[in-house]
Length: 279
Image 1: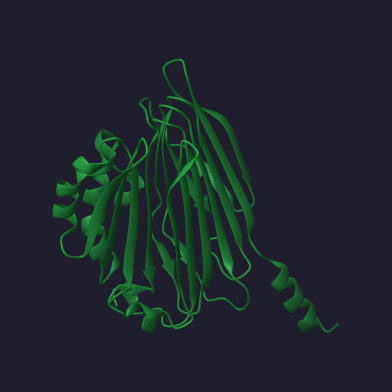
Image 2: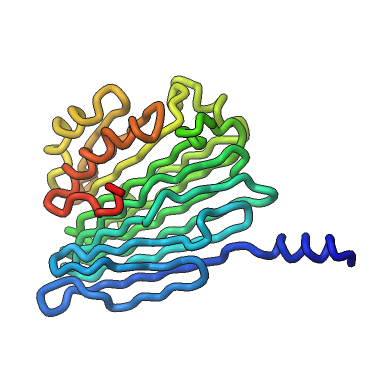
């Protein structure tokens, strides 16, 4: 094999395969770490603080993902414990030279516990290929707040994602019962697909917010006032579980955050937003 061929083969094999695991439990009156495991580019940092909820910051030290990269996060919150999990920065999905980047998220929340899953935005570059899967199990009486947002292109640089692949699969259970399932997929002509009125009417910044809590229906008026015409919100009761769901769309990341941040602050109550969101 030539030198150029050997270098090309080596580069083709250099793919991110990273995994982070965090388990927390309530002991001696507060939420504490029970297990922390990190492998490859997946790192977990815990800012110091005495009060619940425990805050964890997820970091992908690879600086982004491209075709063939794999990243997985597992978070377990024991009974009566409380945790907020976020990311250090937006996750960047770069142009793929072959294959898809994949992110797998597994959440488990015990009885009387709460988890706020609040990663910052995912930025999809033109030509990227990315699939994300979120699986969550909440015990009866557990509270959850889950957000995922995506920017289709480097919008601050005037770049719109025209061609690529994006898939987002959610399976959320409460008390063993499926309470939320969705499969969002777009591509390869991303911009053309999003332009449809039934999609985002061309808006390249989107967010989905899901909250599981008993007072879900009571949140609607406040949420709709924050969201305005750039999205909507609904609430249901599925068995014993209250479910709140909101969708937001905007012309850019700034416009999305202007409504997403106050919405999350309202939904997360006294815990508010992690400090990294303001950096």
